[in-house]
Length: 115
Length: 114
Image (cartoon, rainbow over all chains, first blue to last red; front, side, top):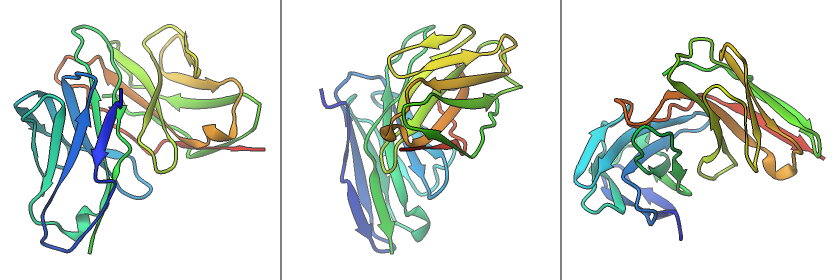
């Protein structure tokens, strides 16, 4: 059971380039999330998904797109990278339990630098 | 979700108990208190959560005041590996319109020293 994994761990892009970050979870969780964390700050939610084939915007969605074609994978895309998108990106997942509390499980993060 | 207030930093000697406070004076009746921590360069890690009663697990204890306006996370025997940023988060039970979104504030930087 690997939990939540993220690919790649590090990446350097030039302004205007595109890339896709992959998040995978093997816990059969329904919900998945993408966060970004800038230096000295807490995490901010970019997009999330409540199930396969569904996505929704979080707090800071501009400049990003996501897809959830398979339940275990949640992809975060940058179509035209900008220096302001330099950050550490974390993926998380959690199960859906009606009427119950739950917790989120985080991946190790992807460090992205946009020059 | 209710706003939380935490001290920006705290120190603790190794082997001693670390008591991390959190103020959430605007908490509503259906909101839970969650604690996560983030060790340097790693993803956040769930620690514990509670609604009204005090809670304990293998990692920590959570003490919630009777009026629920504040809480304390207790690490009973802190080690150097407990050095991290600790986040207190208050949110409604997942399943409503929040979709379980976690709102991370600045947290408390806990430094455990030898």
